[in-house]
Amino acid sequence: MTYVILFLVGIVAYLISTLAGGGGALILLPVVGFYLSPAVVAPVVNLGNMIGRPARLVLFWQHIDWQIVKYYVPFAIAGAVVGGWVFVQLQAAWLQMLLGLFLISTVFQFRFGKKKRSFPMKASYFMPLGFAVTFISTLFGATGAVLNPFYLNMGLVKERMIATKTANSFIAGLAQLSSYAFLGALEGEMWLYGLAIGAGATIGNIVGKRQLKKVSDTRFRQYVIALMVVSGLLMVGRGLF
Image 1 (cartoon, rainbow, N blue to C red):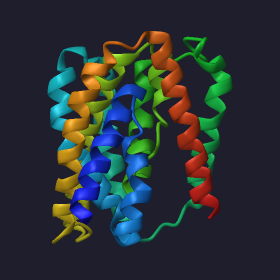
Image 2 (image 1 turned 45 degrees about the vertical axis):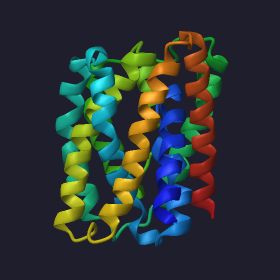
Image 3 (image 1 turned 30 degrees about the horizontal axis):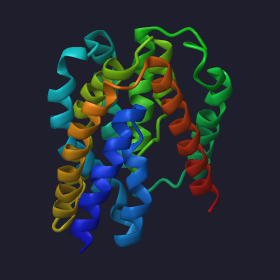
Image 4 (image 1 turned 90 degrees about the vertical axis):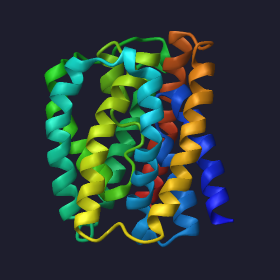
């Protein structure tokens, strides 16, 4: 039954994730945390993400912004290695709360989706972002939609945002899983749980891609901002409780 539930939640999480520019992992966290030990949540969620990404990568390949990828990926790999090393040692609830407050503030930064950009952004800024976001994701299993404001401020929406995020996340995810496996934090039945999530995520990606064509750029920004606010509230809640 646990496998079936994880599979179904994977479908729902990544359908929403495709339409709102990310956040699938954050939707999975409470479900995985409820059915499995808290100590395995981050590795299992990241494994499920990784298994679901190839389908999304193929679906959105032609929309990838490779200039951003070349800045992001090397530093993301470093963040995954360092994050895996401190995975069992660091308790940083305050960090989650800060990220959550930043996400909540985006509703005002983008004026509820009416404003296209809220601050100047360059592709080279994705170097430190790659390290920081992947490091935090390796620790907690998800960072909500922390990168979305930066993609929006680069002018990336809909297919371009999802494609570029997926390319970045796919390569960073390989480093994350290698780090977990090397440190013994990913083993046994955890692989099957991740496979169930990943299978559901693949279906969610396919269905979401079809629905995304019907969504305007403005509506997409509104969905992204709504998801960022919800993600921020959940991250602050997790930090407090």
